[in-house]
Amino acid sequence: MHIIVLGAGAIGTFYGVRLAAEHPVTLIARPEHVDAIRRRGARISGLETTTAAVSAATHVETIPADTLILLTTKVYDNEAAIRPILPMLRSDTCILCLQNGLYSERVVRSLVGGACEVLRGIVQFGVTFMGPGEVALRADGWTSIEDGPRSRAIAELLARSGLDGRISADMRDEMWRKVIVNCVINPLTAVTGLEVGWVTDARIDPLKRLVADECRAVAQRDGVVIEDDVVAAINEVYGPSRNMSSMCQDLLKGRRTEIDYLNGAVVELGERVGIACPANAALAALVRAMEARARPTVDAAQAPRHTT
Image (cartoon, rainbow, N blue to C red; front, top):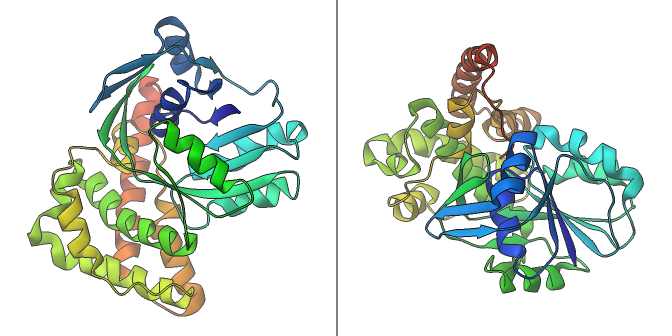
């Protein structure tokens, strides 16, 4: 199976390097990342040290038969990433959306129509973009895949490459659980500029509970009931994490964040179903303000921008 990683930043590069041991892989990324990979290979540091010679390009030229496309762009780039490849899609192509956010795969499905299979995935690895050609694995994990005709084959392919592919029995439930965790961790670490492990500080538990409870209420109106203590789970699991959240990385590098697809999306859906989400709205407003302040500064300095 040929694999195209569309939007190869932190997660996409990590997946591409692991998969390249057994499959032909092409990373589609920004020019400076592509140049570094072509010169030195794609490097994983952190919890493991690996360098792989992987094909890299700035755009998709062709989609071979039996291709798996891993979509790892930011959600707001979905249309820009997918529209140029629409004429190349085949009936045996499969797009696996490995992204954050509420129902981020819906944009892809609306564009693709019935041209090929589109699946939602959930990534539980923590990876940081270190610079052109290098990403750092900070937390090991697994990959959940929406059930579909090709899901078992994809899960087995990922498992053989150390990416622990698992078919989800309820992807909407998993999506909401990941969204709630992200709505707590991402904005709090983005605003403070601190590592993920900081968010387990018990002194901010009341704020975390406000955010999580609002998310749970909206999820229930969306048909997903989450009864377990999400904040307690966050405190237990993420304490040792030295990873920088993707939203924190975005702000530090002056990039647009995915706040509109996390806390902002919860607020929007809450408004539609009659549930106010003031804590999530406040965090979204804070991140948007920081984003607006940071981006002109970086643009003026012509700092590099990388997809993660």
